[in-house]
Amino acid sequence: MTFDWSGYQFPSRVEFLSVDVDEFSLAALINFPLRRVRPEFVAYEHNRYWTGDTYRDPARAIMADFGYDLLCSDVRLLDRQLGDYVFEDWFVTPGVAKRAEALRSDDLSWQEICQRAGIDTGGRLL
Image 1 (cartoon, rainbow, N blue to C red):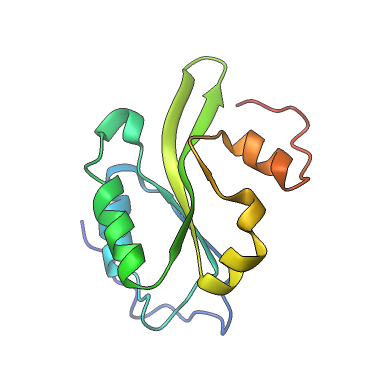
Image 2: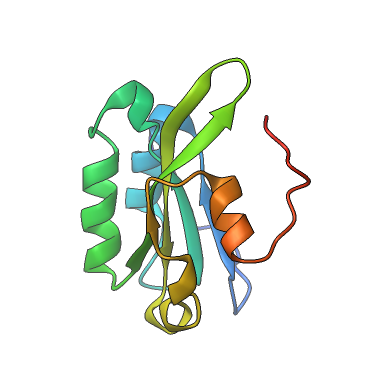
């Protein structure tokens, strides 16, 4: 699958980008115009629990090449039915990384990261 972003008009400032199209996430990221559009925060779903490092490692290399900092690696999802599994990485621009250093983590759930940030998730699990 290919993604054509050429006809899309992006705002001058993009704060957040979520790349979540399952096995097509890497293709979407590869084709995203990161030279032109610089989201400050990128959540990239690699579904490591399902695909291993197949989509995770190439995405990390791409994001590093574009100067992004891997702020939260191997973010886990706590699901009442499916259990606990690693599903995404969170990347930020260097300026955001300085402000978000307290959130830097490896292998925490999104709920634990939100708790560090003082964000009330209401104790929600999916």
